[in-house]
Image (cartoon, rainbow, N blue to C red; front, top):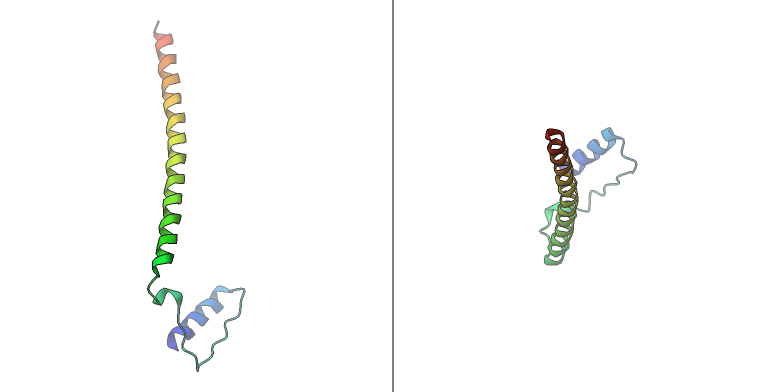
Length: 82
């Protein structure tokens, strides 16, 4: 119950846009207290994989643009030297 009261106080201080109703006869189980199921772990791993692929694609695009800019400057330096 102490944890529930602490969380309730935190949400009140933060101006949470919802109301928390506590039933003292019902124990409060928070989702982070239970171990994740195998399916939820697989879902998280899939999400993480897609996120990392997205980062990679973004970095590849940025790297290609940077390589093109370097090549252009090198060509300009070569032309100015002649």
